[in-house]
View 1 (cartoon, rainbow over the protein chains, first blue to last red):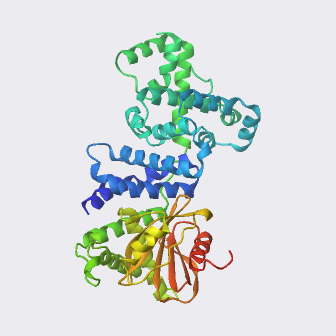
View 2 (tube, rainbow over the protein chains, first blue to last red):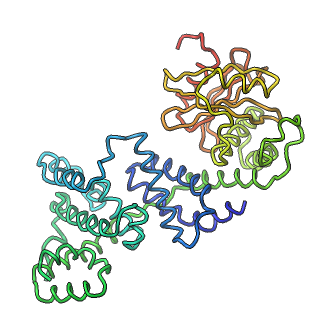
View 3 (cartoon, rainbow over the protein chains, first blue to last red):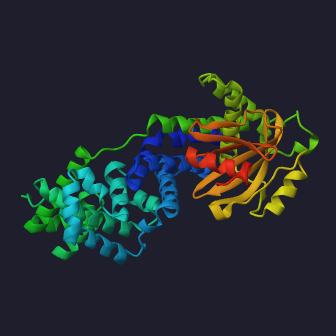
Length: 179
Length: 260
């Protein structure tokens, strides 16, 4: 009972954040709902152990875990080996492969599309940073990686985004204009 | 600080995450190096553009409603501390006053639900969904965990005045994971728990069918409910799997001899 009240007071206000993260990770509205529903059930169960932490980051960590469990059950092929170099290789291939690039530039017209096309490990840190405004420390906690990795993944995500064919096609608004 | 060192830190610097000596060094480098300064400005522009153009999704109202329904169910079952009185003493160990909570929640939900053509069936479907939600949320999903029908069936028979058929359809993708006791319409009922892909399916099995032989699956509070009769029992399945699959599954349980 007390836990239900705690859930309503601390967790429920962040339902939009939870859905936003799930939606960007799963890239599908219905799958995102399933993930958030599952995350809420888990949050209800564990909200008693939420002390002092930022409730939003706490809830987002649960959403992320629920998403990866969901991914393992439904799209196991999308789980990339967590070793950095594997991820880097996958990212490079996605950007450099000309055929892939051609498909991407035909399909992707907006910055949102370009972000959605980023490999999962880069997409998640970028969404947590730019759309949820979490600090590096909080992102590290949510994504369960060291702060240094948050830093390098974000840098990499931004450089991938900058090199995205989509954005070059729409004029490279932030490519090389510095002064 | 040289360009290679600065490049590694530029993104973090744009995020305001470089402090102390590192922050000082990179600021000094940016004043001296045109290429790095230009890249830094690009990063700031990129951030501004993402914040201006990329949508932050909001939770759809249906999702919110489903979460609230889950909370209601938990609260109702927690609020009623009284054990169920309408059953034998041997039911009292059912924790949390589950049955009384169920009744309260169903009442609340029925008020908010349009009266459908088949009110009795609808009440029953709501009760079944309530039990399903409460069991899922409240760690009461399974009281006897076994994929062996020869373990589950005697466990249920020992606690009920009837003996529900227990079938494992693992070779068709429906894995029996256990069972528990629930209450439907103030009577104890056997609940078989199956796993299908990622989904949990609760199947409530009762003797003496009270509903008409078959009814189409319906959606209740975001869950699907499918019904079948057969083998002298009444079968009610609740899950979030799609209605077609759920109907087929409950029919296979009720009428194992019928050709698929």
